Image (cartoon, rainbow, N blue to C red):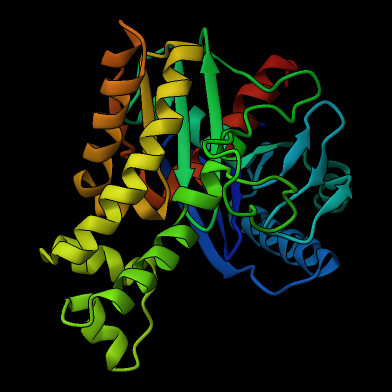
Length: 319
């Protein structure tokens, strides 16, 4: 059985992407909603989709799972998740036993970082910090060409770096305050956008709110890209907060680049330029020259990285 085809699963807070890949080429794929489901329902959905993928591509050699959770990599356990109902779940063995393939598990931002370092914005770079900004903020690290996971596999939770000690409570199951996730995620973008709309009723955001429409991160992004000054101001705030965190990551890791992906990157330079400005002002020399790059693999990064994880781990194990 060739390891060239592997199944990659990106299990997000709202959706699950499943694909059979050969490198970056998707040979088969599906997308299913994952929000609002219990732990057991998520496992059943996962098994069903992987089984369907294997039936479609019977030569697939292994499965990689990218999950937004702290992971015990060696034991294949999803320890806990902020935005999904997962707790001490032996997900590797549960899925492997039922689908009959080797399964490898990692944090979703770790696999996105792997994908971007192999095929995307950081291709060829050996030291990469990856941030995935959506409902929350995930973090992944490639150090000296290898995924860095920490002592048990739960490391690189960069979204829970505190940038404001007396800041707002973090979301989901995080017990902390002032995390960059609480202050610069897509959730925070929507919250700040609604507040800006309320204080600026004549702006595009204000008119949207006045018409009874939802002001969320997507709405703020659309308004900013259309030139609405109020929405651009929201991104100055969110991007600046992101830059505060990035300056610390630059100082700590001195990466070749910091790559930003996830849904919020749809704002592009409107988000990234304030972040770069903060990094230049705050980080030590020469780390203040660290580039902040837009991820290039889009919504498929997690799926591509999960499939790459399965392939590299299988080859490492001699499969």
